Length: 449
Image (cartoon, rainbow, N blue to C red; front, side, top):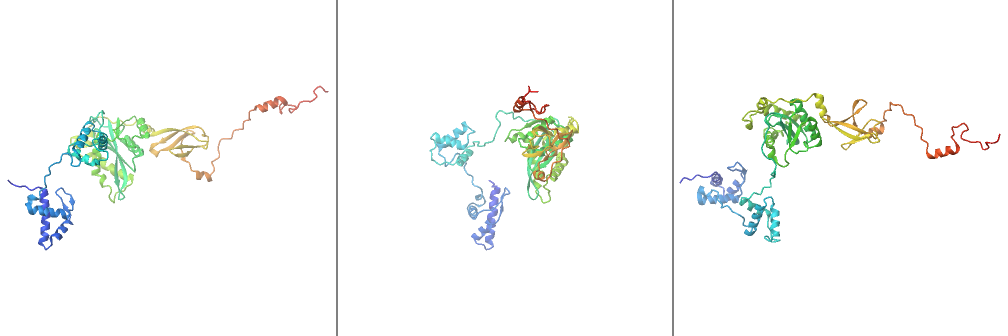
């Protein structure tokens, strides 16, 4: 019967041959083994590693006793169970695990101690239990699975019925700066719509990408995202409400529900993101946005897609019969990106917003104002003042300490006369008014001529 050596046996024979070659050059056995042990070897699986002298001595002895066949890996009899766990204890743990698969291994050990199967102070490492479960083929994964949720796969048939958005974290530049790329992807056609790069996962960058997308391609019916802070913020919810876009968020900690986005992220990392740490890459968000937008629109959209029957996203996008839904006009779109807030003006003519103080014109002390926050202008605040829009400036106390407020153009109102109190009324009843003809003094002898 012919013998076919395995790659492992051939690899070990090559290492043993290197030892024997050094001995033929005059090296002692110890020196030859140490010299080969200092060398890096490439295993049949492509792993580069070094082997200890003890391993090399063992391989040389195996070859001397059995030849090339002696270098074959030993076939070990699989161990079912454990050598360190008593059979009664292991049977109890296996039975409890089958009845309650969600119970953790520490919980199973506590149950064993409570039931008296495991003595109170008997040491038992949970790692030994885990290894025994793995040998017995028991599933010990703690992967979350939605209970009675609808986990059927779905996809929309036409373009812009649903848009997928996700933030992909990566490093850029020689300093390996942290960056986040917000990708917008059409669900039906996998067409790349927009990408915006930011320094962190903030709603501001999501707003910028959404505005550019709507201006170029129009409104989508549904937006699908995960539960990232940029997508579930109050600003994002109010903005999508203004645009009339329905928002769906995936189940937390369940990436299987976002398979299309996760697959896209893995592909874009391998294609472009992993190479952005080069020395000639500008890590500024604007430069990275330009670079990634070119990759998305000019390269990715023209690559064949396996799930599209080897069509490109651009071909599938152009073949969709669904018409795009543009915004009503530019003014309406701009107004949708304006959020309103109400604040009460303090007596020193300042309002507080976002932990900061802003000055308002004189005359609004104690009143409630409607603030218009423009998301496309770095969240700047505006109010309607004298039939025009006035941008509020942040309070500058050091400037106010050296500069006087401009005089008011309105004339000062005449001071109103105070109302008579009870004491004045009683005095006039007893003595008369000082403005009367007698000056408020009566004649002490009225009958005398």
